[in-house]
Amino acid sequence: MPPPVVTRNPVVAQGTRLVAVGDLGPGGVREVETDAHGTLAVGISNGRPFAVSNVCRHQFAKLGQGAVDADGCLVCPWHRAQYDVVTGTMLRGPQGRIFGFPPYSKTVQTTSNAVAKLRSFPVVERDGVIFLVP
Image (tube, rainbow, N blue to C red):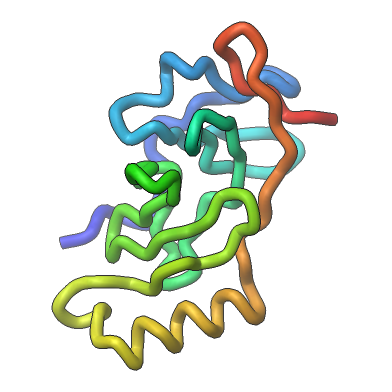
């Protein structure tokens, strides 16, 4: 059973300060609640910080509860869709016995990229902390 479609234990941003890199956890990503942009998925991909919208374009799972894979893609915690955190593009549609059916998965990917890429936000890492760039 997938996790509920709710934000769980988000880090609360302090102004432009989002989260300490050491607090990202084993998946390399956390949900961070901001005043300006709502809740974001914030993490490190290929050594670089990122902040993107927190909602998967497939079935609205919270991406900040997912993980960053070895290729630097943000992976949805429910059906393992993969996102490029720089462009917001879904690189691979949902996976699994039902949602991984190739025509369905490709349709979700194509539709997501045409109308609803993840929104990315400029960030910088300073002294082990990820900050929004104003």
